[in-house]
Length: 385
Image 1 (spheres, one colour):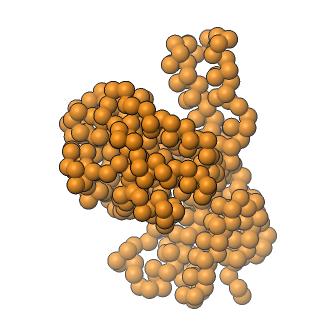
Image 2: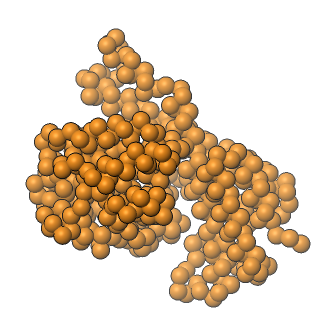
Image 3: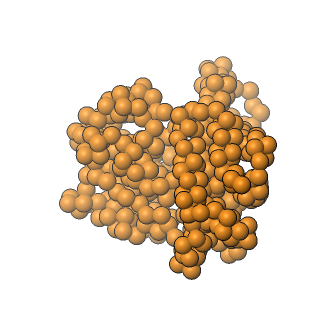
């Protein structure tokens, strides 16, 4: 299938990027800012665009070329991807990318640099990147990814061509899940609904029973909050769950990194690592790096939990405004409890609680203590007598 077939619900964007990659000079630019909410697939769009730019078939043939397969798997020598498990992207990492961008491509037409989550850059780091984005090398293309154009500095926005992704429809996400994971229409539909258009989260819910169970328990816990002790206990469970999921994910990633290292270097599983490779091998499992990954992943899980909590009050607002027929409910399994809550709360109360969730998200982004952040949030969600 073509590189664009895996891009869900972005027909307008696909047409734009197809035109650019096929040689239309009016559609082409060397610095792009690909924007979309979490889960919209902005990183996948960037990789597909890179593959179309580098491949002789422009990524449209049903049988992927060797170039396309290499770009999508992350092994093409002329496409560099910066993704980070850290809270911020470091200035030295960006300087390294600038050096790479100034090199001539080895086998393909372009030297392409993809930066995921460019919004994680501090201002001084962004300023280092600015000149290259404004005046790229003749053979370089920059693909920057962020949740929205407002999440990056105006100087970057004004020097890039902005691509805005839509939130994929539930039906499109469900169809993708069933096709890719063969989970069945019912599981795929429920996962897509609960993920609210977030493709990555939908895939997680469809394939990871623990993630789905944790979400169900969180929603029930929030709907059952009655006193401060409930809030404290629920906060402890939520943070413990996030840390457990993060530890499992990091362990799986580390095992994958080790397996890839052994494959690249021709080492069998369990074979002793030669002395000349030991330094690079040991760097894969450095405790400080694993700790950073776990912290970042834990915060990502907690952010997902906040979205689940927000969906409760989103549903409350939908019922209060008689909008269920037009937009539907996210938490259909909890409809009775949410209907009861929509009667007890005023519209102002529902909006205030959504504001409390937004405050908790800001505190987490500011490195607030997760337990204290969730204790404060859950206390604020308790209904006043």
